[in-house]
Image 1: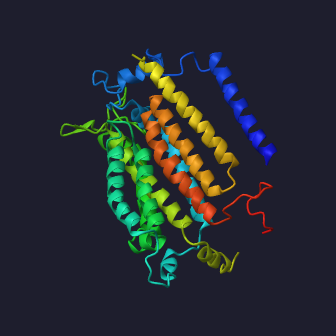
Image 2: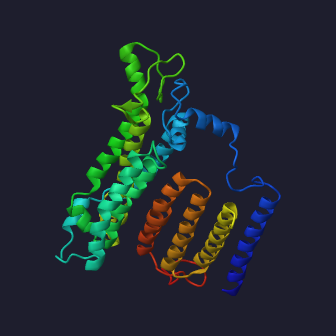
Image 3: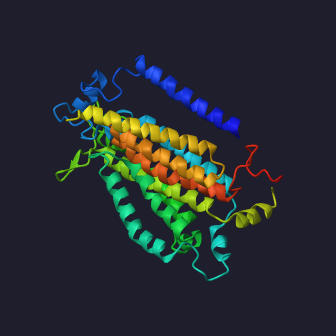
Length: 277
Length: 96
């Protein structure tokens, strides 16, 4: 135990000293905080992100990070979302054959389970607040810091709290189960897919040039999604990408948590009951 | 009057030291549930660091994921296995 302590402490000290040395010799620049001046690439993004004077380059969003994530570098985010979906599919494949309806029916006693009344009351107050805050993070993602993934992961905390403070049976009896979450997740993914192709569809009907993942009109492709609806800035595709990513991430995380919180004995009974192991 | 940059650096240094201590405790703790709490403490301090480094987007995604969802996943998994780590470093050292 003593040797382990010394080893852990020693390696941490060596790590800190190495990073300090790297900082001191200028590996990350001599100024770890963001520079007062802006680099050329960053200044280009900041100059064009909300600039109606340059309709060919702008993303029509004051939030440069969301504009980069879903417009300038949208394809990266699409594949990132795909990786997240594959992870959820992996979790579903591991827990295949487990019917949540049977799980709900297997609850034999009538006790509520879960933690104390104080915890439950506090959760009842907190859950609507969490949902509201997460929705505002996602829906204002094109105006203020935040976005679909941020909002979705914040929303997933609400069912998680209910799972821990109440029980998995409570959540399942309220209808938050496998099927609705799968539907939510699929609607999110389909929404992202159709938002990415929206400009192409408009181009097909109007006979104009258009690109996949196009937001505002580009050179030689005059099709674009509306930047505002009756005066409210929605930044074309960014608003829709954020909404659908929010649904997809919240649904995916909730699905995994429900599956993880199924009691181990029930999981084992399902696994051992498999005829084709 | 303290310079604003100096104050930011001071907060970052304190946050860094707290995260280091929390990491040390998380690695050495043999009670896995306490180790998850220390890990969550380290994540909280990291969220403050992200905010001080002027990345509010990352801070917003880091708080729910690293303080809420990730410890919850690990706690669910600990519930399915043994709660403590044995002397030899293996989880569940009682021959199972």
